[in-house]
Image 1 (cartoon, rainbow, N blue to C red):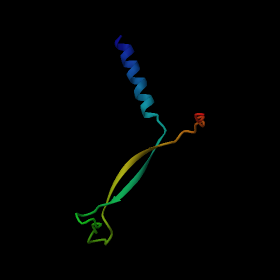
Image 2: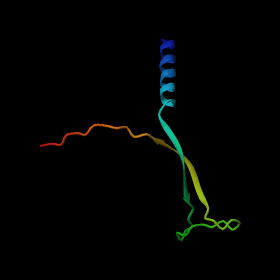
Image 3: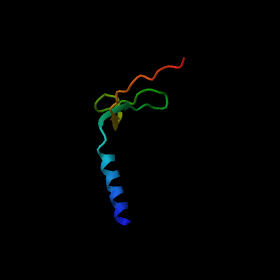
Image 4: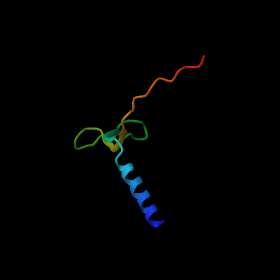
Length: 68
């Protein structure tokens, strides 16, 4: 019984990590209370908050027929 649970968990972990995902970097300007972009004094460019986001591939499908 324990062997079956371990096997099921391992299979689930392998399929979860094998998903077709790509990561991309998304950056958003940091704004102050007034709504203006915060500028870095050294570079003169606006400060940004960047995150890595997973982007899944869209699958092709068939058209669903409409109701009559």
